Image (cartoon, rainbow, N blue to C red):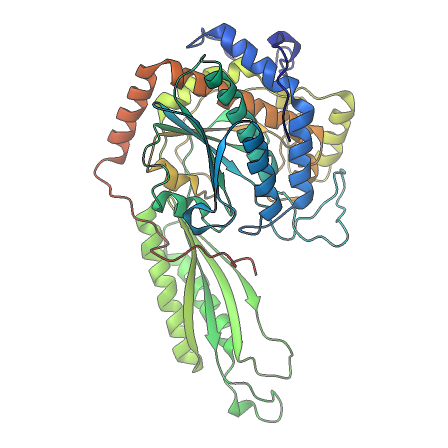
Length: 488
């Protein structure tokens, strides 16, 4: 769709922070504050347009590498607004790079749009699936992609008006959920000339990211045996499912002897078809995570040995396919401090009375203590966390290629966990859209600082060089081609 740019409006009309709920001082902003005021107003004035895009992608709910319509919608929106779009990059049909401008600095914004299987949910505060649908946006990537496009379009306008000078790129990044889409994009050199990358993620609060992520390596282990009648001739068969279960048992015994920060989880994706047939094929899908990428590789190799031992003991055979692999997140305090000031300027999310009621009904479904609903209006102080959090992201690989900064925005009711029906429900309402707009504005303001302050870019690059040291990037998933059918 073609978006119409309206005149700037006063930022006070659009400040979404509830009075008294945003702690901290609003510092003097880098760059042109008048320009930032206009930017906030322009993005907010197109609320309904971006809401329509986000909810359309929420409805599509396409899983990793299958996001054909979602990707096409974002590509068309960017093309209609002056971007040159290159589709099908890095051998991924749904990946794209949209560019505008020329010269330095080159600022990249990441956009995601894949859904999760098993999380179809109506936009209501009780669990209610959608007939005929399986997948849902339980991680809010419909909001992620739309906000990034919104920020990119605003920056394109400023470059076109010669308020800013440089290049803006929006990276359409498929299959973050286990498919490691950005890893292939990094491996293809798509970030080699980028100065800084900006990203965000949906969440239940508003905060700039100063917490790393767990490195991750995943694979599908496939066992093959001999089929036979399970009652009349069991001695003639060799159960592939026995191989899977023996492997699972050995890996579970490993847990006592690996670093406590490790996370290993699995699902049996194929365990046979009928109890009276000895299964000649079975498959189990494993994730191995740890804060350090080197440790992930070591533990994953141990899991492989367990798989091989299980095959030996059950007289079956096993092979495995690497599905994904991501680095930990390399943080950049220089960029985080700048983004924090811009997030404070934008503020948090203010709910209407009806949204407060919706939020409380969502919170009533949780079995643990949760913050007050209205704390979505707060901006969390900038704070470095010592642990690596509980999740993984392929943004980690980007962060080892180029200085990277990101934030969370409150798109879900406070206390809502990701990958839940509650997150999917919130993402289909204005609760999600309001948080999305916080992210779009904050990313755009941060980019303005990067375009107007060469010293900020230089300091971020110097911190990046010191943090990365002499590490030579190597994808944890090796040289395999994109696992385009990993959700099948």
